[in-house]
Image (cartoon, rainbow over all chains, first blue to last red):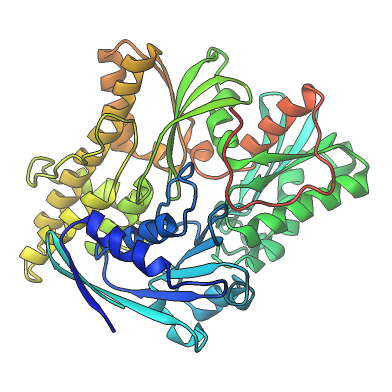
Length: 138
Length: 333
């Protein structure tokens, strides 16, 4: 496991872009960390690392639950379980189809329903250390 | 032409019947929940609830419009953007209805629906105009050149405005729905009590709301658990002041840049009372005309979908039954 201390959004994105190089079709990345700890920012870096075209900015999928970004080296599926209350609500998103799909799945607030994830899942933990300091463990 | 509009891009199951600009009915599942005879209509998140809600909402929409299904001239349904599973259900429902009725079908872009929602209540609005979509899922500023022709001027780089409202409301223990509750709480607070730095987005017209969220979190953490009612009200008011100032700052910047003095502010957050007040004040300062939908047309609804659908049909467009749902899309430019 690697531990990074990021001192800016740009640094978090760089860590993620590097991490993106290790991913393949069917990779599942589960992100865990408080509000404002850099999860969405990390996904922006992943998108960059996967060469997702920047015509559609990567933004938080909290409301719509899934954002899909095609067009990169691999399609990127960006989930957010923040506002889901029951595991059934998450299951209703046909998660298995995505886990076994042709792209990279990255899930914010994954620890809300940890049992829904396949064994191959890579877990990434974020910690809010201070106004301009975040810890990323992956 | 009486058009049935179906909207299921996210949480709401909504169906409306629209004739020209006249809304014959406009039923949304969350509002419908209050209708006792149709009890059991629950606006839950999972897509399968759309399946359960749609037949009930359809019946209500037809009854309210006082017409039978056979009298519908065309069917419109949202096909993009949104949650794929949710979109598919409304889209299939709409296509099946149109097929069975042997009437034209048209797929509609959800964002185009919001941008056009102002036409349903305004005779005076003419193209071009600046359209700000501000909701739980979107914060997009468009130059609307003409019907079907949109230039994206800026979008959020992180959280949507309504999402920041909901998350800060949750931090403050205000419950759900966070946005309207925060709006209400803020009216009793001091908007100058806490200083929120305006997001640094440079010269472009993009938006950013995650910085507000982090700043609010730091203010809450500094209280070490002692969050008095006064603190909550003041923080709500200060955040709201900063967020609405930021939205207005973008609009004013676009107004100057594009020399366009017509604004349409649409989407769920357009129902926010502080934003509506501020828009009224700032727009008169800059001599701009503003168009904001009435509250039932701010949130997701079927009327805006029916209206956009009818406009496309009038121009001779219709969608094939092979039309698929798409989670992500851009508006035609």
